[in-house]
Each structure stands twice: as structure tokens, then as C-alpha cells.
Image (cartoon, rainbow, N blue to C red; front, side, top):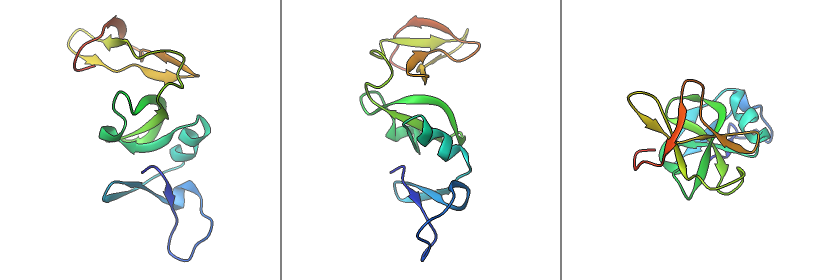
Length: 114
């Protein structure tokens, strides 16, 4: 659930030595986990950070299926728009407490997929 899990018998560990618990599956993580925690988020599986549960943070968690999930409502406003390219729509990312589109994307009306 986004918590660092240290090796058995280890009371303290670095993010690079730990795993992040993601449902029934543990994923080896890297120092990006500490970066996510520093912005108030937790590394979670994409499905555990849907609208209403959290905002996607701009910080990497080291894999495509793991995102930095910022608590819902902590990004300066409602998630009431999508971010689009010529062929797809995405959710905005939380950057410095604000919802923004990633590089190469533009703000567009909210879509079901975004």
C-alpha cells in the first residue's frame, strides 16, 4: 500500500534496499521512492491511484506500472481537465502542488479515459 518494507530483521533501510508493497505483489524500488515521499506521495500501483483516490505525481517511482500517488485534494484544485496529445488523453500530474500537463501535452476537456 505504498509503504517501504525492509528486509526481515532490519529495523531501518534505505529506499534502494526496500520494496514497496503493492497489493499482493512486492516490487523492488529505487531511490525515487524517497523523492515521492518528499513531495507527500507514496508509490502505488496505477490502479490504486485513480481519480478520487489520489493525483499522479510528477516524480517517478521507477516503473511504468507504479506511480507517485499524491493524496486526493492536495494539488491545488479539482482534476477537471485532461491532458491530450494528437492521439490520446491522460490525467494531469501534480507538480509543486498544482495540476499540470506533462511536456508535449496540452490541456483539453475532461474525457472518460483521462
